[in-house]
Length: 341
Image 1 (cartoon, helix red, strand yellow):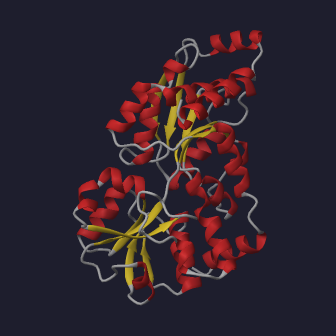
Image 2 (tube, rainbow, N blue to C red; image 1 turned 45 degrees about the vertical axis):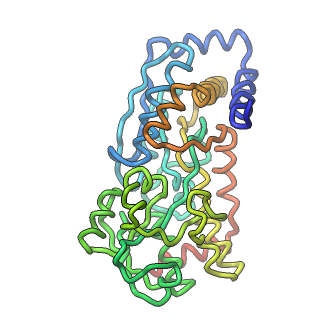
């Protein structure tokens, strides 16, 4: 058995052992005849939507009682609308799942007034894949490399100036002296690419998995140039592209960057709402890990070009909790920089 399979089996076994026989029987009956709402925090199209619908197609047969799973797009506020709904409005019994936005913990710590949840109270079910975000420029833009960001002014299309990806760019401008001008109003990946095609912008910020899924020919033909990635180490798919941390040797600045890119560890992860009984959370986690081993699921993921880099629900919870361990000095510096903009 390969390492991936061993990991999945181990996680599934641990989840099953957490339940007593009598409680297990009760949980098997709980989902019978029920419908699970699977919330997708972004509109149709893109990686969140693709991963959410992939899970919706395959998870049900691994949950005792085989409930119907209905995907539901709930865009707004860069994912905040969906997170607020799952936390405050949705049933807290395990009949709501959410492919939560990877920035939900980081953004909570930035004191956004829109946020009405505590990320630490959601329960992780499992991660489909981690993510690496990139700064990408149109092929005939003046900026050709990361070094050019320091000397050549550029316009970068973003969804909103208060989202975490935009904060990263503002921090680069303030702490490193890059010359990017952020222009908001481009909510989806296709909007951003259209902006550079029309020359409304020179570049944009986008997760690499989204870029590779939606525009593989543009990457192959080098119509789009990936010049920078937000990660602690270089992604294996783009090994020649430098990381944000490589742009400076200042340890304090690197600490700020580590905090800002920590959400990429969460990637595309599935959560359920607070208040779900632990035994039910365990059953959902077990079902998720079993789904990952399902050959039909793996074939479907490969067919639609969705890479898998799994983590257990317990690991996902730990990533969220670790996000809150950032030093207050680094966090204050980010907040101060945001206020200045």
